[in-house]
Each structure stands twice: as C-alpha cells, then as structure tokens.
Image (cartoon, rainbow, N blue to C red; front, side):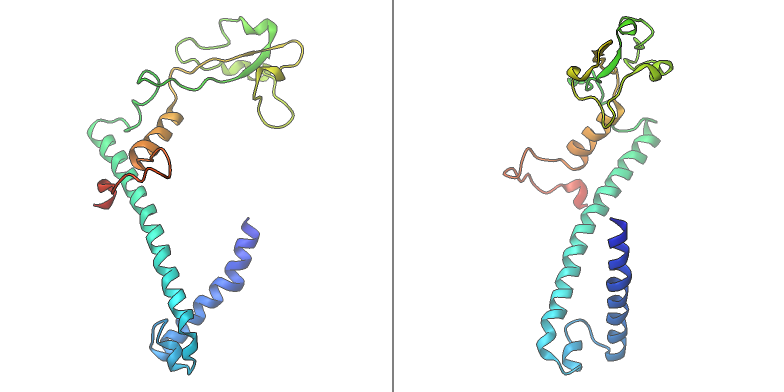
Length: 191
C-alpha cells in the first residue's frame, strides 16, 4: 500500500499542488478564474471539479476531527472529574458478557486450577508455551484440536477492548442499526 501511495504522492500529488500554487500566484486567480486568464475558458470545469473535491474532502475530515475532539474531550473530562475512563464501566456485568476465548490445551492441563485465573478469567501466562495453535491464523473451533489436546472456552471477567469498542460505536458514533435508520443530528458533535 505504501509504495503506490508514495509514488502517487511524489509523481502526481506534489507536482500538481506546486503547479496549482504557482499558477494561482502568477495569475492572481482562483481555480475557476485562472482558466479565463490563461485563455482556456473551456477548462473552467477542471477548476470547478477541483473546488468540489476540496469541499467534499473538507466535509469528510471535519467529521473525523469532530469524532476525535469528542473522544478526547470525553476522555480528558472523565479522567479529570472521576479518574476513570468513560468506557471503564462498560464491561461484563452491565447486561453484557465478555466474549469467550478459545484455548486449545493439552488434555492433562485442561483441568488444572492454575491454568485459568478465577478472579480475572484470563489464562496463566506461565502456560503460554503449552497452548496449541495452527500453522496459520488462530483456532476458530474446537474441532481443530489435534490428538492429545482439548478445547476450553474461558470468559474474561472484564473486557476493556470490548468496552472501548462499545463506547465508540454506541456513544461517540451513535451508530444506527442499519442504513435504513438514519438517526438524527448528533448535537454533541455539531457543537
């Protein structure tokens, strides 16, 4: 991805940007009037297209900046006022459960009380080398367990990653259930 991006940036983006700035300064015109001054009035559509593209990109980036400012504002405001992040209390126990993990462990280790920490629901890091993983990817089902191994599915007591995603989708974005439900104006982002 980065190779074509930088090629396009250096071979197209920067030369066209410098050309547009140079012509604008030389003729003292904007993207629409410059074509009349150059004696090519038929190319005014190019200037109009450039202006329209700039306007659409500004709309898109303003939304991203609003999301970022809202996220930082909520985070800093919560950290100053209460000392906890706004999504810290969105874990399990709030009518939602953390997703279960699929671990494939040796049969003799599966019943060990030291494999899973009872207070956190996470596996003991000293047993990391004992887990089985496929050659590529991660195990997706218990059927993948080879002979001598068994699948267990512990559920963590807290899931901060899931909580942050829930906060982002349901509070920051206020994401609707589908494209047919438009929702409304998000005043917390508008202001």
